[in-house]
Length: 329
Image (tube, rainbow, N blue to C red; front, top):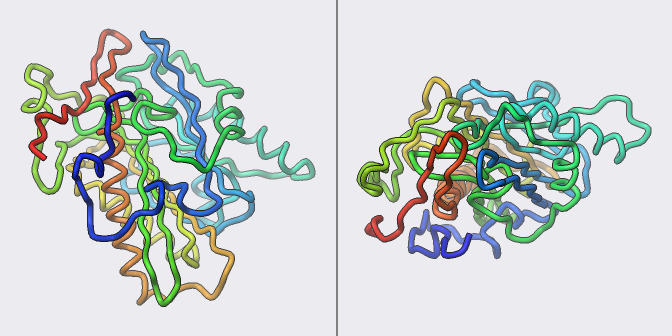
């Protein structure tokens, strides 16, 4: 990641709200992130990203499907019960099922007397840069991401599940951001992590920046299976229905950076609350939380691109990093 900068360091400020200390999902107390990165410099550019709430307990949660062209293992039980009972793991499309089995191993070790578990594992298709048919993700890769999760600033760009992804015509990857609010006298932190791999035209502060103009001769890269996974964590006291409303806003925010929401895009948002206090906030008080989600998702998506590096992968395909000197910001 040498020489790459986050959006804020480049002067791209999204919205008026302050960020948390790390400007990351890990600003929400008890939320940890771990990566395992696989990059052989040739045909494999993939990995695993784990979002781990600690302590691991049942948390209010919701999933919103913007477009369901994807494989989000475990989502229907979250929808039905409104509860997250697992870390959230992200990886490449054809590795999602092996990853889910590995999360099952993790949960069984965590709860030796349990008889039923619901791993929640999402994906995007990194097959433009990585040979996904090799299905390189093993149980050990997933366990390393889970067991190595920490509360520091997560690596962004070409890290973990973002190692081989492309978005808006450029090399993308993992991005994260956070916002602070006070709602009904209650301090609230909203943190977001994204795995960006979707189509459209990069838009920064309302200005379209097509890859054809920023990288002459590069041509537009629209890999098949475009998708985006968005994870929203908050310490706001919210129930599952209200978290569903947050998850919808997270998908809406993709439009701010130029998403095309194409037929082949699996766009999902997962929102959960770590709050142990009650009662829940009234719906009429949620506008500031909605604003925090929208701004944090937009900045996380920009970070996922701005922190990524040019990558050449399988079949000689190349995905170019956003060139800062041509952004005009």
